[in-house]
Length: 116
Image 1: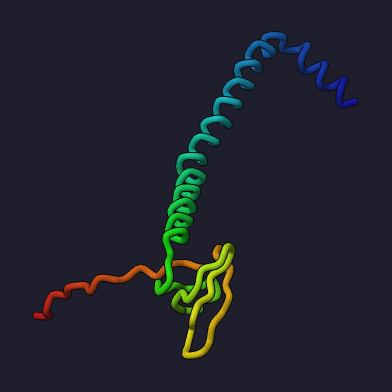
Image 2: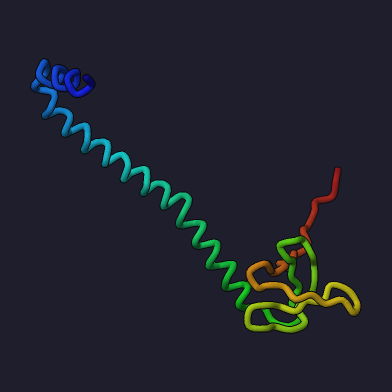
């Protein structure tokens, strides 16, 4: 039944078949443009941030201060192949996977203007 209705609609307007080809092209062009926009505004910046974070993790050494994904602050005591041994308190050490550690950036003191 549906096929019959579609065939009748196409037979009633034979000039539409040429126009529908242009509609298909515009659809694909629009889809490609959407993908390009997503790539440049979402995918590319995310991969760039991941590379930067990986470089920071690779540059960590003994004595650096870090924070884990769970929010635990500590200092690197030892570096293993896939993990860090961090000290979180006196005589308290934890073995943490390298991918769940973020280096703590040393903050520069901000100069504040005196209130008037």
